[in-house]
Length: 246
Image (cartoon, rainbow, N blue to C red; front, side, top):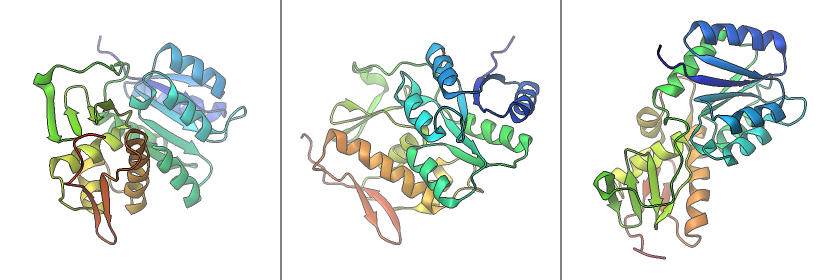
């Protein structure tokens, strides 16, 4: 029997949860329902899922805070996550995207649309549960693209000045694309088209939000260096003249 991708569903409204469990199950997934953030953390710790659907309005913890706690767990940064919420204001979407979420759906919504979004996200997701190792991977699968960066395609890992970066799926995709052509300016539309699965519900702010979180992670390694340049009104490029060591 083929393995069914495990979907962690964190939703406190039982009616919505029942519907989503049904459509996910009939579409080949194995949903695991949690009605509280505390229960979700326990389930995630026991076995990281293929994807997590998080309601923002949970009874015990804000969904955005739950997202950050799950991301901090072992393997959490490699699990794609989608926010499900009654809030439809743009500011809430921006907050979710800036945190590094893969998608955001506002209630009311079509359960089939959610399943389609889940499938789209998983299509290019990193296999969950693979531990991020601190040791150097075999050089046969590592490619040095520009001196400070090392790309491991097989493990979906990028090192910056020897440090392994904990990247979300889209952060990895953006940085990998910029690394392929240092100095080349990629417009927001190009980044959306080449990195995101479905651009119909994405917009320029999506790219800006992921660039912001990516820059923050690079700064933890080299605070004085700006590897990603912004060309206002155009897009982003990876700097060509980065020092080889810090």
